[in-house]
Length: 101
Image (spheres, rainbow, N blue to C red):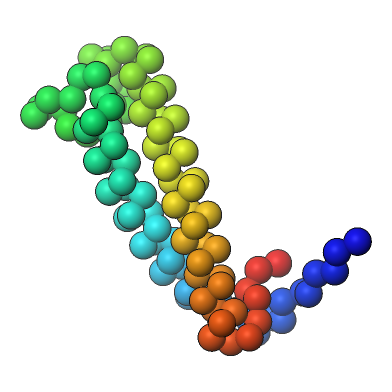
C-alpha cells in the first residue's frame, strides 16, 4: 500500500504560472523537434513542402498524413511529460512541496 501526500492548495496555485510557462516552452521545443524529424522521414519533403501535411491537403496520400499525425502526437506527448515532470521536480526542490494532484 503506498501513501501519497496531497499537495496544499497554495502549492497548486503557486505552480500554475510555472506549469503554464513550461507548457508553452515544451510546445515550442516539441514543435522544433518534430519539424527536424519530419524533414528527415517524410517521403515527399522538398523546398515547397517542408511543413507536415494537414488532413485537408489532398495532394498528400492518407498514409503520409497519418504518419505525420502519429509522429507529432508521440513527440508532443513525450516532451510534455518530460517538461511537466522536470518542472514539478524543480518546484518541489524550490518550495519543498509537490505541485501535482
